[in-house]
Length: 369
Image 1 (cartoon, helix red, strand yellow):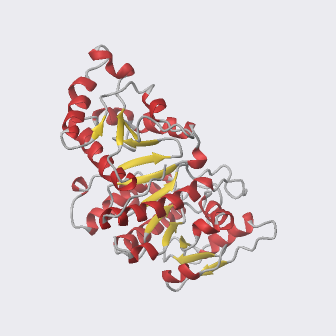
Image 2: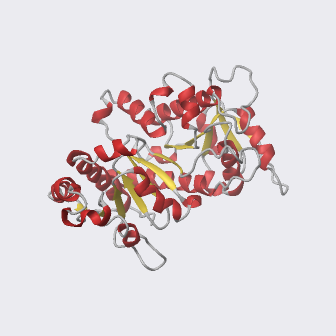
């Protein structure tokens, strides 16, 4: 990342057009013009204009502008929604997707937007990408290549690996969920619980510790304090309730410590998140928690507030964030959707861009917490 890249625009992908993505995008431009300045939407003008009509009010004009060059987004006035019109066979003169309806066409359009933005970020044409929520079932219905990926994270990993001419296995990524009070990184992501338990291996835990250490060191300007959640109740209670802490997680922690990683011994998962939680004037004991599987880590983060949660993909050669919620088909088109998480995701993307530049230039890093 160069100093020039700090002035590049940020791409926001449309998300599933049948969900709340277009609405929260338009609301973000309406309600947080300082945060969305220099951003643009990768999507469909007609879909965004429909969303603008739904959320417009209080005398606030929300023009949707068609870009001919993404750099034009840097000069758009506040509360104008700049759009890079995606070329997709899912459109072909069709009207915007019906709200709340699962469809292959909507899934394809959402996926096409992600691919365009990811490739632009990998080529250095945009500073970062922020992804509005897509529907995993719709993505699968869209067929190849999307039916090979459970979600954003796996699709972006494959695109990045191809860009740097390596395999997916050689480009490991991890999901981090963060809000004002807690950060959590997951050892496994979108797999069954049975598969998630099998993924708790020495190599997987060590690799997750390494990725977490490297990514957050750039953000914090120091080695992060990592609280490691156990897999079993009471972290195994010395082997009484399972030996994963003794035979797998503990040894991985020791190996990571030998590399300079500040990681705790396995801690009972019913207490580690409380110990890491930060409150005003009272920082947490840890900067981040390493959770062994998806729901173990996401439940406490979402309990503290989905409206402020941000999903960050660690390990990619690009900056990608997203709101910590789904497509909410049940309220799509009503104008009720809250844009707070998307606004936080855009804010986080800007900060991560700065942190990457700071880390590579040797300047003093900034903390987002």
